[in-house]
Picture 1 (cartoon, one colour):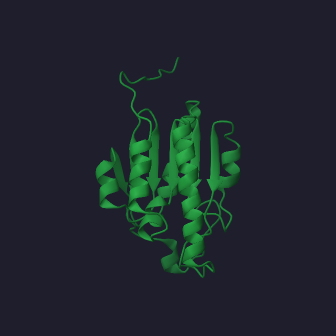
Picture 2 (spheres, rainbow, N blue to C red; picture 1 turned 30 degrees about the horizontal axis):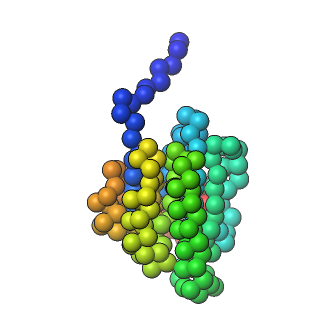
Length: 185
């Protein structure tokens, strides 16, 4: 049996926001990267907060080359889990990530760009609202842009085409179960 492939009559890039306090925002974005690679689309993932602790997606993404690349630009989650870096260092890294995002978005080499944890970076004042809105405005019309992280700003939500909120109902940490490889990181 031949599998049918759909093609939209009017292809258009989408802005997708994945926010909320439940588990699965980055995982959802990684699923979109996997799906896009299956369509031989070029994907760039920029992680604004991750970079100090290993996470499994770094090595699995390498298996999707040359379609997907990942840049972990952060120094961990600012102000939590005993993170030792000052706000100024987190901000510098986030500003570098914004510059990288501008480059990747304006270069037009990618079909989909994921800005992982950018909502958190905005809430923590590591990036400015104007910078995020500029990234949305500069996006080529055919490019998909995914923004993840808690506390999505209302103006970002307003500009998005699709917004999903991940809501926590129950989490293993409430039973004092440590984060588990392959599921939590």
